[in-house]
Length: 182
Image 1 (cartoon, rainbow, N blue to C red):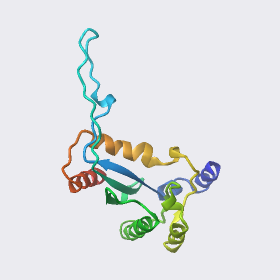
Image 2: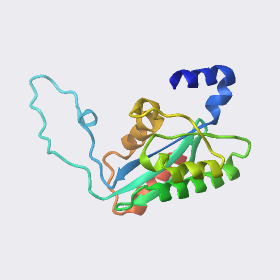
Image 3: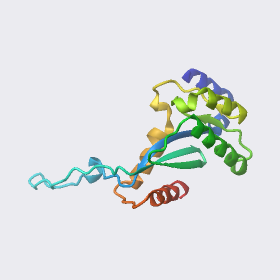
Image 4: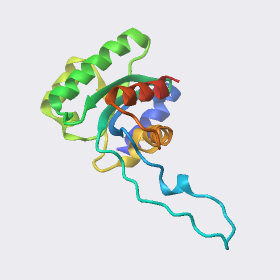
């Protein structure tokens, strides 16, 4: 599969990479404490260690779905806690994505890269992808190294959101939108 993608890159060059639009989902918490690396501080070896209490992420969270490429974020949606991404919901997201791509990126024939989550690979979703004329890249099972959102976008976003307190979903969503569009 990777060889196939390399062959395509060799044939099409940078134009191939510029057409790739990747999508994924991640939970965004109302409060996510700083990690150990963020709370580290330099001190003399004879100085006492500061007392730290274990703090956990809040239970309130919003599911963030995003599609992005080399130019930035192409489309984003948010689901409240308790809602899930199933085939029907994902197809609705793909339709909204296609409309946005027509409006914003008219000159570009995007190639969708998403993982093999069940809602992404269901028969209904595959039918919808054909109907929407969205081409997809092959994605091997259990390959997070091929999901740019997992190793680039989400860690950067979560670093920005670390240690912020939000009172409601709207505040979380507004800050995520600000970061994505900023």
